[in-house]
Amino acid sequence: MAKSPVLDPYGRPVDRKALTEEIAAASFGSVRSPVSGYPGDGLDPVRLANILRAADQGDPVQYLELAETIEERDLHYLGVVGTRKRAVSQLPATVTTRGTTAAEKKHADAFRDWLTRDELQGELFDILDAVGKGYSFTEIIWEHADGMTVPQRLEWRDPRWFRFQRKDLRTPVMLNEGGQEEPLPAYKFIFAPIKAKSGLPVRGGLARPAAWAWMFKAFTQRDWAIFTQTYGQPIRVGKYGPGTSEEEKDTLYHAVVNIAGDCAAIMPDSMMMEFIEAQNISGSVDLYERRADWLDKQTSKAVLGQTSTTDAVTGGLGSGKEHRQVQEDIETADAGLLAGVLNQMLVRPFVDLNFGPQKRYPQLKLARPEAEDLKAWTEAAKPWVEVGLQVSEKEVLAKLGLSAPKSGERILGKPPETPPQPGMQPGAGNGNTPESIFKGGFIPGTGIQGRCRPAVRTALYGRFFGGVANCGSDRPPGAGSRPGGGRDAGSD
Image (cartoon, rainbow, N blue to C red; front, top):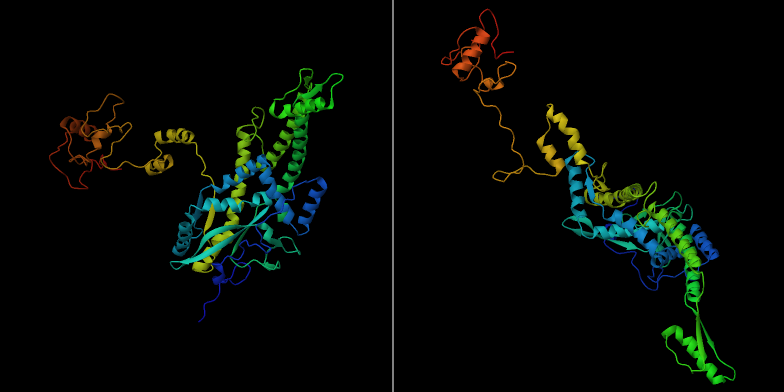
């Protein structure tokens, strides 16, 4: 009987042979060319609006190229986007079993073994290219090894080589060698939409609003450079007297021009050169700097949600710790979105290809370990332990990250108090019989078995029975009834 094919969540059969082949690699002379354009050259508001409008209508090539250009040319944007991506890509990855059966635990263990790879952090960083562009595509190159079908590597693919179906601009398709749109093969790609806002994937990337800030900052930097070149250096004025020949004028002119580059020139004694510095230019310089800084802060707010971790601004409401908490909230949200994508497009294919479709699948989680205030926990637990609450020592050691000492190891810390020894004399106090009297069991002849010192025995027997106890005789169980129908001292 032929084995039934594996179907992906969309009902498409999986071609196991095609899983090991690269079907979206770059190649010259095709639509998947690695050569990129530079639409950011000479960008103005009209061209930027046309680029974004074309992306909204299903042609995102220039928008994606512009997003790449902004990362390369804007150091601030590169820094904040890189910070956001690295914060998530280096989070610890854990795999949990959603079920309780042995088979479900086996599935989780198999994927957990594959997950321990040095390349994983770099692959997650590439998948998080979706933070800037709004979405990313990663091809899964599978391999058959030791009876298992596992991903050999995860390869980032240029999103320019993919499109969205025109009917909804949401369903991703790939371009073949001839430029025709084709459905994505089953279990071959990780399509990761990580959007900064609700809406179409192509309109959800941070590069879209950052493009406006980058363009306006480019205008400011250009004007700043012109201003600096014009007024940052003093104006050189050469003066010549009456009767100066044209040759002498040329000599003076060349001296004035060259003095700016190498600060050295020659001229006749009859000629004079003055340096005239511009006055009150500091205000104009501050204007350009403040505008560029303001645009950078808006970019920080869009990418990181705050400015305190990127700009040296301290004090005031909402600074410092509060800004860091905002960044952690964004990190947690990105990690949750990425984990959801990987559970659907990597964990599920892994299990289906090796163990068949399941009702429950292992769950991948990307999260920073929660830091617990051990001091506060200790201060809260100590009073309860002192009044008799029984706490597992093993649990306390695990919470503190400590291990139980082994036999023969040197032990640090205060030793436990020595418990009371049997046979100790009653101490001064309320006159009650000390607990140590009962450590050896009941004394013979009174229903209290065990050995005791005569003085203690006499006092104890006299208190309960009005006589002298006899330690030398052992009474059988049940023979310790008190005269007159009373109960044994050891019975309750």
